[in-house]
Image (cartoon, rainbow, N blue to C red; front, side, top):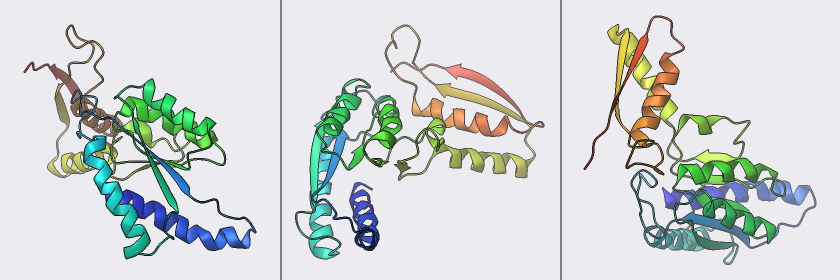
Length: 228
């Protein structure tokens, strides 16, 4: 998916090139792409898909080479990829992106494994210059689907809303009218302070939001905490 990221951006810029020429603007190269990921995996709740810079950087290197020489979408040197260690922090990650904005060295943001760090960046980026797109393979949570609040966020892996729609269709076809939600979530309890909500919680939250719209379906929440 990281490989597809860069090809998507390159194709997007490639299709915009004729429009830029007709508008009599000179495209500024290189395009600055800031990749925000942690150096270490950290806690599973903060980095559920275990994305890191050491794992991702080789993929970006291959993708950049393919953009230049395999697909010939852009001339060599058109993309400048910079890597920032976000440390899975909702304070450090946005700060690193803001620094690039202040230095005028960001045209696109990619990565952002921690959803609580992704959200503020995706909110702010619409106001940077003419708008800076944010691409991520994480951020499946329902709330990030608000296009008014996150207008330039692209989630490459889809969303939990799709899962919610699937579950609703299954419930409707089977004639189910009661849902019991059992999920593992250590956030907010003693020993789990400082932990974000789990992906288990976020996925069920999206399902709950979907079925709450139906008057003939009742949902019941049962919280299950597992310590390993």
